[in-house]
Length: 212
Length: 169
Image: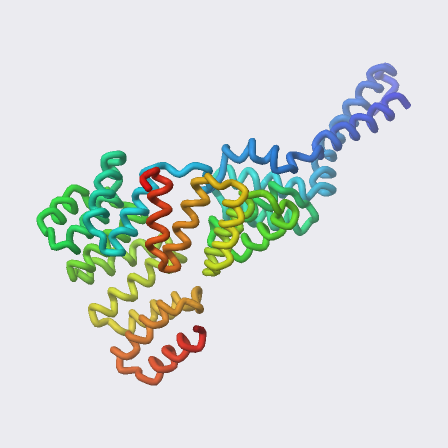
């Protein structure tokens, strides 16, 4: 009888000890958050904000400021391939070709991985080396098939090199996952025009107007 | 087998050992059977810690289906869903969290990211502003605000925010 009671007691201890509820409040959680969390931080490092700022300044054509910010990013992070490539691109835009080539040459191509490969593709596209750019985007998409932005870039490059059917296919894949993206749809319509598929182009243009 | 060959004590201890063995085998089964949501949650945590967000999201979703609900589960489900390109699922998880913790700036910001990922930048911006009302100097919130403004084409406003983050206004 004693053994039986001991058995029941042990079973209960084993069972309930394991089912004690873990943390369930924001306070407890925040203490654990630091251990593992994908890309979610309280603080932003200066170089991250500065890199975004540099990009934005280049978009609004404040090139001198952008170049200054890129250099300050590189002072802090000299190995940041992405920044080097973007700075090279800005130099191309400002017709400082020697500086652009110098900056571009400072990055060995085999060191360019991940997102930075997209930038490399952009530079090849700018140099009108569309085949090389398309190859880079395709390689990138093999590892990141759901990256719509890269697919959009591939679609654009394919259209620029006159491969309209391939470009249209890529645009359609992008629009499958982003049906509300009018920017992409307008580019898609443009390529349909180039491919002389006028009715479809009109249909797509109408869609962009309907959703306004 | 003639059991009379064994003393009473031996039989007693043998019985006890057999019961313990039984317990060792049955308890894990019973635990997993009756606490499936807890087991799924812990498996999800393991996958999350290993960076396997796809698998983690699957475990978290199943734990939620089995009835487990907690701040951390919803948060992790949202994070894993965002990391694996499922912003709708992330938004749903973070929306439940917002209902439970409306004044949690962190939740508001994560929800904002989910809305932004589904191209609802208006709602995202509203949520970021709510988070900034709770923590006005939160750099990450300012950073996200600038990124959202950029996506809306409001470049000058975004530039000013970046300069503010850098203390170079």
